[in-house]
Image (cartoon, rainbow, N blue to C red; front, side):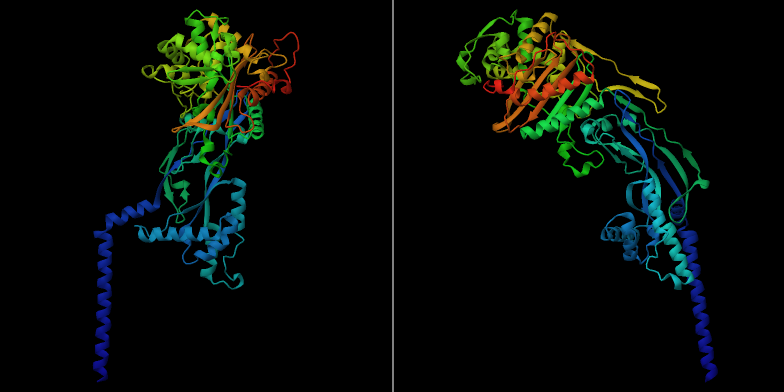
Length: 619
């Protein structure tokens, strides 16, 4: 009986051994033959890596060589998810203060990474990105702090397996790859012009999101390199196992026409003006009237380019270049230029202004005061809507439309910014009597501040329209000039005589009795036009909402600088001559000092005090 039992047990063991070897043989056959191609591919994919090598992003300078945007070395920190195992909570608790990431956020990210590996084709979870833009010093501190952690182990009583596990967690749990941080030394002062960058998803560097960073990304970004190599079990590249290497080509440098010191001054004045007038926003452009170089372009509210995500996306817009607004009376400059150039009118030509009320096409046009007979000069200085409505009727639709488009309105200036607006001019076929008379004083159309600056510059340049310039040159990383930009005359928009007469009319606006007296300067003659436009939406004009602006240049006798300033929805007074003209004067005074412009007044005349002008209706 015992012998039979022994033989049964022996036979069972032999059978089990044979079945085990048969199963093992079958598995080997599957692995080596049936799934050989599939598994070999997975092994190659795990052992070999092809990574993109980021190019170093180019530097942005101002006209004087001051750095406006530059990249610094940084680290992108990853976690080796293969070492997580069942210690998710403990590792999250340990790493949270080191990485400065909330513990629960880390634990959730760890679980998600492990889940991806479970449902994917690879059982080995890929590295997890946990922090970007970590400075080199901060990464060194992280790595050092990690080597001192116990990860919940009782260190004096570690088994060999636990000791090996602790070593892996301390030295291989985190690793970092080289990256770069974009730094803007002047912060918010240039945020709208420069824009900001974000990391590329494939790790090939930074990509511009708006402003110059986006528009010139092709030059600034450079060309990424390539590295094909093997990697170790933690996913790190093994430099001695490289099979292909192509070095990146660093990005080119860009030199702007902007003077950063003047930019800071303008930004500060806008901030102050916005606060004092309780305005929704403010913006300004300062341009060299001779060359078209933009010396400053600022706006508020602004944002921090180092942390743009903390601000509403609408603050990323660049109002001087991107916002279309009804210009109001500043557009009377175009109507005046056409009349002086084509109809033989002079500044002394009389216009009857109907005592402040004029009905055309059954719609009433009003002036801010009851004017009777005015010269064209006084119509401009006192900003009579009726006077310019009648002037436009004398011109006719075609002539008015030709001058508006020749001045550059209704089309982009061509400045190198991706989102530059074109504005809107009523098409010729739609210039009815009503549309024509309202367009004559800046209603029913829209323009940008940049277009208005260029148009004002054409008066300063004896009738020649100069294309605005924002880029001075593009240089290689070694400093070799690759492309240089020169001033460009787009076309002649009026005769020299008409431009000179327009200059005189603009000076009259800042003279006593004009709407822009508060813009008058002590040492310089000023040529300006004020404009107070009621804002509108699809339902019509909005009560109590105004866009107030002043456009002009100085010295009027030998123009050097064009300035356009605007306040959006000022709430503490809204006439441009009252709330914007003083800002124009302040910016002009600082620009004169910064650019070393000699005075053109022989006698020092103080501007009229604000109290004396309080009774004058400003427009």
